[in-house]
Image (cartoon, rainbow, N blue to C red; front, side):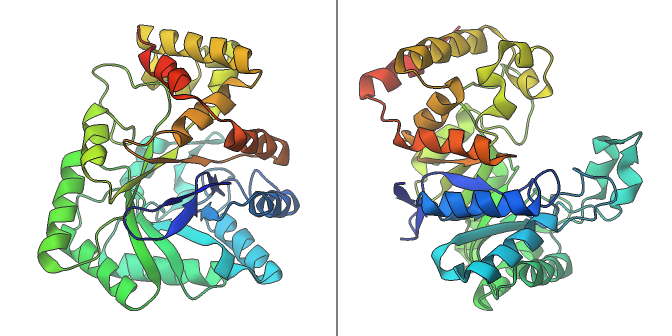
Length: 335
């Protein structure tokens, strides 16, 4: 697996990141370990988790399962120095049990209950994450959901202290507007605080539909901003949109498709299907390869497979070389 530089840090990370959200809840610990072993065997080193994973995946969970599984695996394998470990804070809810309604999460109420990115919250959250991960530091610590209630300087100063203390090497931000990201960077520059080197947003080959208001999905403005600021790497979560590229039936009414419905997506889905047939690959593998071929801005796709079989399918995209002409053909597809 190839590596790419994270921002302008000099730090090399694998071109495909492994999201560990489902580990310890929807994916058993045994299969999680198999997936982690396989990913590392294939040259992967960029592991992504969060302190809130996965209270919303299993009723009765209070989060931390994914970090705990990773911690036990790292301790057993003794390979902490060989992986680039990212986790997140700010999106854990205070009362997870209160947001389940009839076996489903009420996200309207849950989003009002995020812990946020206050100084004490971040310090406490990272300490708890380090205990579960069985390590003394993480390589990348994200603000998981942008907190616009807590004073920004309080959050940035707290993150700076965590970096200075050696508990986090780099910081990142997720689910954030472009104007807010620029303000974060300006304050960091003014005060000498460490600025984000990674931006984790939802991003795929499909483009969000015109007029959609969505904090978490990359839009044209954010892409333009990232092109102008190569010191910030885009880590693209949900790059294959829950498998909708591979199944027309699954796309019908699927919530992951809703932000993209329209003629532009129809044209892009047709292009992916046609080229995937020519190359004899799955559509989602083509999408992952296309993302890994992006240079302006550079993109690191973050996959979150539930099974070892799904991971194996994802990993096949790593060896899929796309010519400039084929990438241009994909780029031109539009409704």
